[in-house]
Amino acid sequence: MTTPELRQLRYFLVLAEELSFTRAAARLMIAQQSLSQQITALERILGVKLFERDSRGTTLTDIGALFVAEARAVTDRAEEAVAVVGRARRGEVGSLNVAFLTSVANHLLPPVVRAVRDQLPDLRLTTESTTIAPLVEGVFGGRYDAAFTRTPLTAGLHSMTLATEPVCAVLPEGHPLAERAELKLADLANEPWVMTPRSSWEPWHRAYDDQFHEAGFVPDIVQEEANVQSLLGLVAAGIGVTRLARSARSLRRTGVVFVPLTGAVARTEMVWLSGNTSPALHRLLDVVTELSATTDLTETG
Image (cartoon, rainbow, N blue to C red; front, side, top):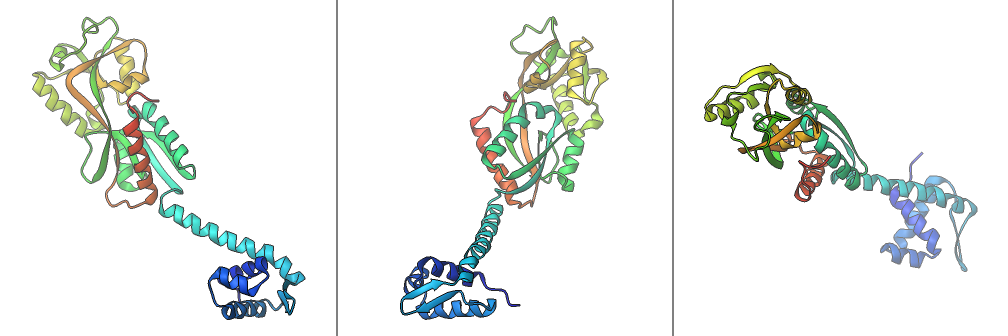
């Protein structure tokens, strides 16, 4: 059986509302003869008479009246489908998998997810907190559409800086230097250090090497932990000192003191794979750009 065209269904619905070929044709901006031909073709396809036409005017048959609701459901669904495609083209619907570096998730994940939920309620955002190496691997491998992380990273990723904040020396409460307003890295030359293992992310440690070299010493690393919260616990226990972005304060409120290090800053970035043209990703970029311009993302959570 031949299926009616959407155009024919729309013509039928307008005629059913107007019950006048003259008014319906004018509303549709087509010739009255063309409208009549399309209605006749529709009746032929369906094998039924939809309208009665006589000298008194045009009326729906009983079957025609029943067909109104069915035809409207089809045209409404077609319009919805077109609207969904338009929204997908604008990145308003779909899904994204996003990774957050563990050390930034506590303060960064909540405002980002809230902003997406508020502005793009039909975009499904799946989030995961992870460490740096699997985060970068996941972006390159397509597991994550984007990630929120710290620099330095590796080549091949597009990035957008969301926040810049001081790097701080993290000292146990009661430490002789804890009352200082600011410290130089060289002030910590004789301290035992707790740090992430070099294997956790080589680019970070190469940057640390340069900074320690400039400060004139090689740190005495007495213990390594990959997890920032574990590092903070070690500092609180008096095992050693470390250096972290100021926002890491949100991970531990007692037992440690954060003192800014002169001239040292940490950058939080959103990164994604070069060549990713997903409309949803670029709408996420818009939302996050606006968020970073209006909110201190190092003090949220």
